[in-house]
Image (tube, rainbow, N blue to C red; front, top):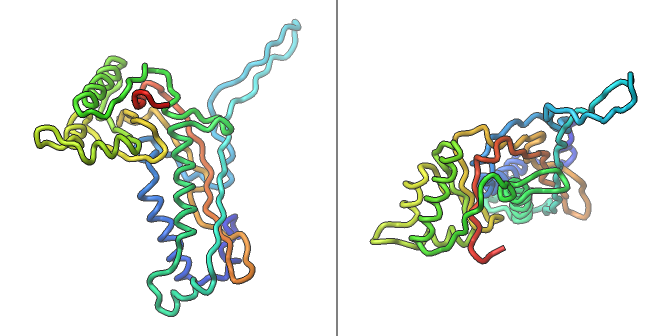
Length: 270
């Protein structure tokens, strides 16, 4: 038996397929950070930390004393969110139902996707994670939603990164307000979204947890998401006609070269 304990749930194979499919669809649509950073793993649920390759050397003042250092590691964060499903409803898939009510599973998957992306973009201090918006390698460039000003800010961002010897193509991660602007604005009959894509040379990605935008180099090697147990559905308990399942994962994120990203906060927003 593994940590997911799925065999104890006493659910049919087809029910599990429906649950996994619903969760997978949400994760594919909503996980954003994995699209712009390097991903290492999954390494397994027994992976507890990653080696940082450094020593924290203690100060030894006594002559002849043994010098020593503590190896530095970064622990993985393990997240888990429970949700309840009706057993009778799940059994309906065996009766031919094709529209199972899996809303609780989808909502749990969405929250876990937001948890991971929040750590990547905004940081997670409890887990020792610095997010991309917290990097100070470049001066942030304030962003406004007027098309010409937005394109100008992106151009300045690309120039700043090129001046720091950071190559493209560049990807742009945008929050809700910027995404809406890109979706509806046109200049001289030419969509703003297409102009942005041609300017950065990469892709535009949408994240609900980001305020403003992030310009991220697509060269690779700058940022690393390490996954222990990848996002999976497991079994927790069962009672009163309900089965309690969970979506869980373990991961950490680290910045290898802070020059690979530049933050563009919305002007006047915090």
